[in-house]
Length: 184
Image (cartoon, rainbow, N blue to C red; front, side):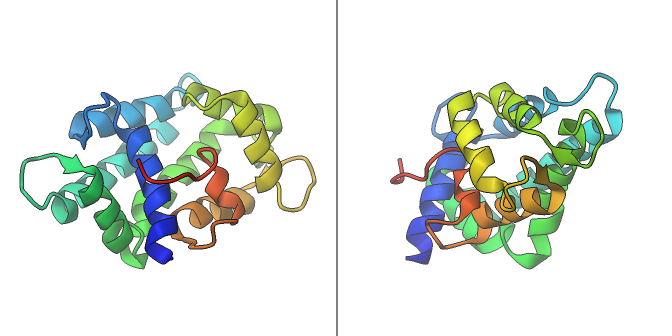
């Protein structure tokens, strides 16, 4: 069960990261994903842009070092799922690779600097990342755990942790990229 739920989520994530759709992740794909994330930052927000680029770079190095089993400089879907399960989500790597992106992203998205994400800020992010507003609006409702109309930093981090670490198919964070479906 653990592998099935996480495998589905990581397969969805792979598809999202595979910018050119060739079935292999490359350094260019990860740079493209980082650039998509950078689109949500305000003009001149160099600190958060640099933090996101650095974290995506660490993530790519982890994928390549621990996931590129055949040494071709590319990571297949199966290699990605395996390295995500074994390395990227391990305690020694998760904070520096994944959560570093999330912290910088939260800072970049919080355009009014009130420490929380409004529905508009959240939907704007996912719109820039190619997620339809209907999906991101539904996700916002699920991630606003206390129902106060905003997503706090703790709620956002909790949702991301759910997505990457939880084996519960009903965990709210599983809806970050839309409903979890069968592996592609």
